[in-house]
Length: 250
Ligand SMILES: Nc1ncnc2c1ncn2[C@@H]1O[C@H](COP(=O)(O)OP(=O)(O)OP(=O)(O)O)[C@@H](O)[C@H]1O
Image (cartoon, rainbow, N blue to C red):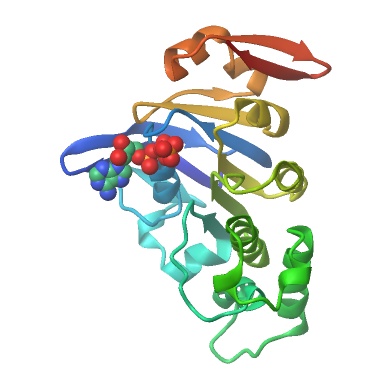
């Protein structure tokens, strides 16, 4: 078992935000975290990334409580791409991606061919190689998003946590990204709003509602009309298309 949440809770200003979540990541593949606005997806991702200390329960990375690990130890294993980034520096796109290599380098090690290759590959896979020399501050919202994903890929993590990574992306780059995630061979947790994308690209789906994890499993076992009505307060019909699911809302 690698990264897992055991009965983890987190409260802010006396209000419970994440409530008793026990979650395991699939051994390999993509776990889609879905739920309405404010259901606790980002908060849970921050807990899983060790950025927040829970008010109850624990997060374990390789059976060690994440709070007992140093930041660099966590970063050697796990990358986290948040919804917003406050990078406000005069770096190029490529230099931002290269920051992903920092946790992997010893104090006395210089920049290596391996670092160079990892950065180039990350830029390639996010379709950002042509923008590598452009200043970060001049990139569009979608390009910045892809650079942050590239920085996480350059980190070569075993666990990758992504908070609504498709947010600013056009449809082609959304689909490219979801396919890329499926092919990485890394354990991934990705918060998504699009239930059809979650059903099409995720090996498992976990549904958050009012801070609780209400269901986790294969998309066809999790998504049904009753759950969608209860959690998202909308009417939907589910049809089976080929070997996948399609959710239509009305
Ligand atoms: N530091 C904080 N202090 C007070 N309330 C907070 C704090 N962080 C989050 N919350 C509240 O906790 C709830 C869950 O927030 P969170 O960002 O985890 O939800 P989410 O499921 O990711 O939502 P969205 O889909 O809108 O991104 C929200 O109601 C939010 O306002």
